[in-house]
Length: 382
Ligand code: SAH
Image: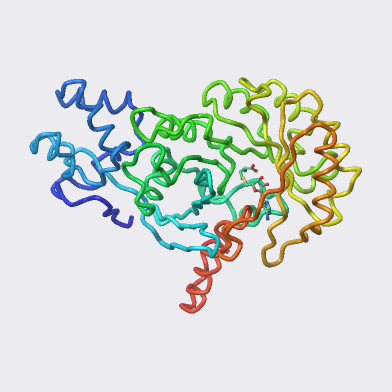
């Protein structure tokens, strides 16, 4: 295993493997750990504040704790973030990081600044098992689920890079989170739930559930739990209005067809006109973009408090689709709007750095392949 050196300036006497990662631990678990060290209950709260409100990256910086206690913490715990393997800046202000974990696995995280908000697009898995035909991440095999620490770690590392600690809420750069990076969050439910509980905690990162959106390709059996136990906004990657076509573009549809998916949407806990479900619909030229498709979409959504987000297809090398023409997208959008739904077209951001939807990880895999090939090695992820 590669050594993980982030935030490790003290306590080198305890072997790395014996120390527990403190980031990603629930408040309850942290309180129990500290209680077992004989610390009074308020210490857990102080530590939490240093970690998630102030963004301390080293126990030594936690000056409201005694020196002795800081040393004890450093003996027991690792305080680390993923490391930055790559950092890209788009001409439109979008930022993309490739973050690396101690085992060498990597994910991409994207920051999208807008006039009224800053959205961080967070990954839930290394790779993805869903093999959606239009998505580049889906062409890379799943390596593994991310642990809570690795999901929270993306937010913390992004805040480090954006100099976003500690700031009054009104001045923050990261105001919103979308679980729309690599992976299917509802296939990693427990870890995503644990990570988002930390992100939503009012005494820490403090991003409210109304500012967090989880996007799923339609893992129907987990949707009710997502609403009841995590309580964030839901986005559903619909992309097609018939099972025949959806089976092909989103193969998960063979398991959970459109009728089942929409039934789960109707029953989504907390959904109402003020909190609508977002239906994502990627615009694929000549495939799903006809006026008849738009009318059928509006018909399917009847009775579901929803908004529609049309995503111009972001191409990648070898992709089997092209993006619909702008006038086709505009016409589709008009038809859905005229049927009484709010439809918007998502502006592609960060295309120049391959940071747009469905393009994640591709560049790093390609780069590594090139390195491996030049060394005459067989790429592990080929
Ligand atoms: N697995 C989840 C999370 C991924 S979110 C889900 O499927 O919802 C990423 C969003 O970008 C999804 O709506 C996905 O369908 C969409 N997407 C993937 N590849 C794309 C591409 N090449 N162009 C545009 N949108 C894409």
